[in-house]
Length: 181
Image (cartoon, rainbow, N blue to C red; front, side, top):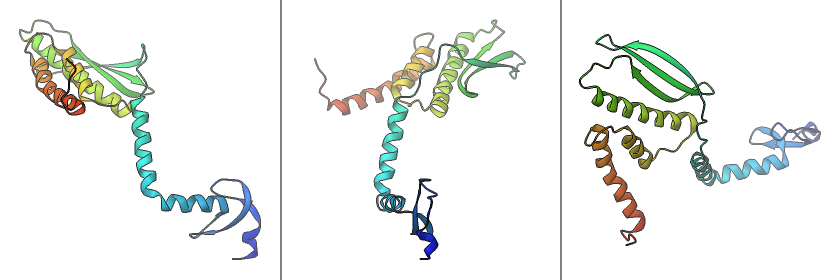
């Protein structure tokens, strides 16, 4: 090591002016050298800790405000009916999607609206997961399906019933099958 390395200079890691030394082909201070050694030696624990901290942050994801900016798009389907698609945004990222139509003469409108509501609710749930870090759970999915249902045994209702069986199994596994009477 040359005499120049013993001069006090700003460490490129902590930016404090200290005496620097060589560590794995880089010149850093003694404190940062110790930290680098610990990081290398404890890489597995650091990775696990990072995953746990990330999961905890997602649990505390922010809620949507009462008022959001939105963009509305007009489009046409294959039967040339006009549709309006509105995308709510937070900081420019899509977090909700809504779709509506200008026509109401369709015989299958209730079914179509129910399915449309289901699709947009589930896509909105996914968008909040992607852009806001909101945790996706089976319970949230079931809630959106049930809120989309317009009548008994429509598609969202049937999907919620079938998936609800998995929620029950998960709850039984957590409680060991011992439900309070």
